[in-house]
Image (cartoon, rainbow, N blue to C red; front, side, top):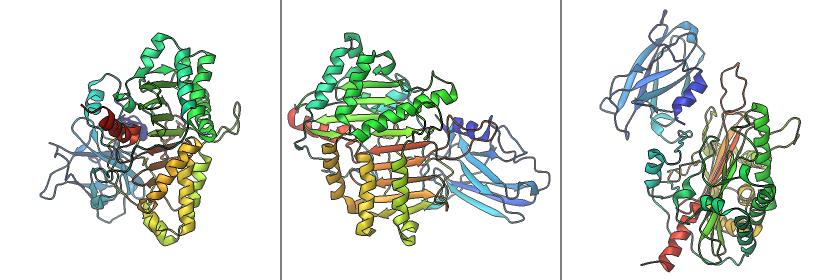
Length: 500
């Protein structure tokens, strides 16, 4: 989904700002955007919304100048004073910058200096969530994306090496192996064929949160009651009790979302698909993937080592007020522990952790098809925290890592602790602690994101679509530096056992 769709939702029927027809010019605003590092387009335009003016195409800007800036000067009437102006830049065919906002100051000339893709101008350190990319199965776009070599999440495009050695953990994985084998034996030969792939397959990278993504594998909707019970046995064998319950709660919330929207074609508690990669084994690498709206789990096994990333969990809404499953709330612990940790910081620490004081956009950086995202370390480093604060941060991390079976979670937390001083905590929020927020925990061995998102399915359609709200949450857990999907472990295994 490109920003074009987001703009239509946000601005309503592609309503755009008329900056041509200003009857009583009062305030002059110069817009400048730097395009350094991006191929200069033949033309660049600016457009946005502000009542009651409208224009159906962007205004062309002049440039670039010697510093890489495009610019345009515009006059605004008195009626625009004090009103929020949302605008963006665009060039070519569906190339959109992020959505921005300003307030026009009366009788005062303003100069707005932007840098493509960044919220903080030429400081170039704060990025909101990138465009949502949906590469449907079998399309040239998907082929091109998957042909890009997998690198992994990094801070600067360069991998930190030797973080994930192949080793024995001593944890029994037989229950996981048995659960998968029992399920595969219970489905037909045709069903097994469509959900089974080699462990080195690019199927690992074909997942998405978006409900309309065309998924491969075997869907829960086509399973019998017995087969579905066996599918849940895979979750029970692989995840902690907490992890299983979170997964089921998300599915229940999807069922509630279908009820609220009366759209049972798009949403529902059974709209999840299973894929199996490799063959269950004590020695050879293998794994499974669960993929659906607001719940994606990638589960890789090498011997008795487990990598459970990327994992995506989300929910809209986050609370059921009445009817079936009344009182169900999702992400209570992740939300409350995040606030508690941030609140434990001193003001100086909060100032360092908070990279942006406006939460009018989504901020997650590492969702679907972002396997090679470059995410710089930002915020406050854990080495600057007190002992109590470090323990609180570890408890917050454990809330996510603890979705794995207890033994595997313990192994992962030992890995996290060994890199604690290299861990950074980032926060985005307005001044009201009760308002929507975003946080990121980033170390060489784990990346965690929590984001209050703009509504997609539920909001008052008689009003403009609001910004991020607390009843829509996305969370992401990644293993940076090349070990998402167990890729680094797989590489080491193949190097040792299958070299030619």
